[in-house]
Length: 561
Image (cartoon, rainbow, N blue to C red):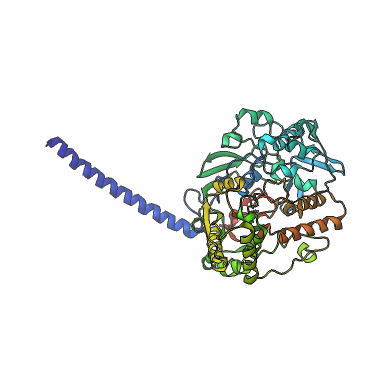
């Protein structure tokens, strides 16, 4: 044995022991600091709020698949884009339309004109122009883009024909008359067009920057050009983001923080609760089991109906068992949304869903659902089994194959999926196989039709019944199950263009009846949110239309320390 080697090993062990004592001392010090920081509501390393940096820390539930506003479809991407981008029109703190990149506008029966404000600027200092909107809208409708929200631009002259490849995009009824004047021709009268242009898909896109990204626009922080209150300066995929104040943004009433750090990306509700409890994030949602903890902490609990409907959506493609109407009716009558909400999910802020149209949708004089009520649904196993036997005969089956139920991987999604799995086994003898996927993969499977049933949700894009009413039109690519009905398409076109309020609302009533009679979906619940916010953060807002969480008007009130 080499004696030098032996002596060297003894010295190394002594050094390692000394290092261990040092590390232990450091760990104890960090624990003490964290303890006192947690008890004052201010964590070390800046925590939820860093007053010196005028910065807050937040969590996102998922990783945005990408941030190209011409192609984005998911709520998480919408949250990021709502802080980094701005359309012609925006929403104020009271959910009212307010000027954005356009200082004023005029909407007529045949079209609209928007006047771009001179001070609207991109994050590289160049001006936002009418050409940027014209380029963006033509890209949305280009068939090669495959934008799932292309339909929302169909009120523009020739938009649908361009999107279907029947006309070149140069024929689209939008043109930059000058750098600051945008003219739009309508396919049909669209008095609600101002509500549409506040939506993400109508955001601008500058052609030279887009071309410079070589097909990677919106894929990374450096591949996004902003005209909103904040700039995405860092994006560590799957881990974190940093949004910094845009020095070129025109509106001094928005973008009041210097920095928003998205330090966590997780849909684990318990993890988010612990982060808030430890003073690491400024706000979080609360599930029902968390409410006692919140009350013990004496937090102020706020509640909000976010306008979102969740439902079981069937795959209506011809090769699927779920394309059979009697099969869908069997599943419809073998369940009761009230049981799901009150006995399974037990979320105090949720409501059992009854219709494609949530309770907050307005009719002519009051609530739409009061003016156009549906027959009351109730569990009816005898009827459900009769429909299942009819479906078996029509499909020529002795036994039904396993039914694939696609869902997300959150605890709430899995709880609901397991409920339906057990329910349909018990009531109808059907085998449901749960296909739980991470967010991005679930979207991909929904788009490709790789499911029999998918647990889906739809939130409002603008304040009008049409934001739900056109969801199952044949041309709407968010119609993931590819339901097709000539009657539905005709009703949607009436709802899009009818100027008589009564006739237009009657069309929505007929859409609701058709969704119900064809069992296009099975409504699950209307989502409400219980949540808590750091008392030092003011101006934070949750929205039913627009980003689910909005920090554009948020600021730090140091007097709340």
